Length: 257
Ligand SMILES: Nc1ncnc2c1ncn2[C@@H]1O[C@H](COP(=O)(O)OP(=O)(O)O)[C@@H](O)[C@H]1O
Ligand SMILES: [Mg+2]
Image: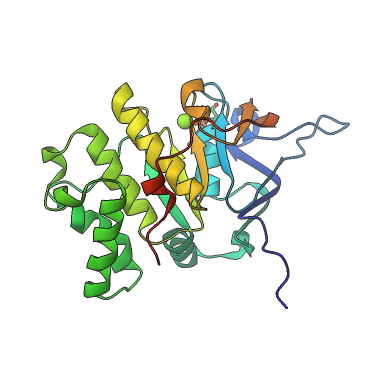
């Protein structure tokens, strides 16, 4: 019988430094040991959790996000993603892991210019080698899930900021990744679009998707089940919080793989 599922994220003694010697910046260091040496960051995130990572500018949020997203590698320590030790993987293998395990949402949407919403959402499926009819079916389902079924043929410049971010969320979830990783996903949105995008992310989590979201706004972090705070490259608090308003029922079911 298979054992219990491993956590989606396991960080053990993870540090990250930029530069060398005197000029080195220790962006992630964790607590200090008896001699002041960095012990590294330890973090577990179980499947289905919803974590907000908070901290002021320069505290190490993006460095942590880059490591969790396999966009960068730790200077020391181990990272297991969905049970896979990503430390031993080469560039090509890391790209595969990113495609299969992680759905990214960035502050600046990162959509491809002059490309329809449907084609944007199909893109990660194309990289994953999914055939075109299946790609289209899943991309349409993902767009419907974020309320943009009737905008499938629109290009980014024909969509509002909120709609563009919803396309990005559809693109992130269409591969059914182990985790949705969002860096300030509402940082460029007005308050109404912020609520719309957060309602979608809340709904995805309610349907079982693991979410890690970086934010410096309390109003955004309020949506998470757990808040991890970073100060100077170390986790200084990690607390569970009561849920805010539940997601709309229509979103409590996610597109099938
Ligand atoms: N590529 C880099 N080269 C050198 N220093 C960096 C680099 N990226 C980040 N840093 C430094 O690491 C620290 C943490 O940065 P970052 O992870 O971007 O923090 P945050 O996202 O919380 O603002 C900061 O002191 C920043 O200046
Ligand atoms: Mg940052």
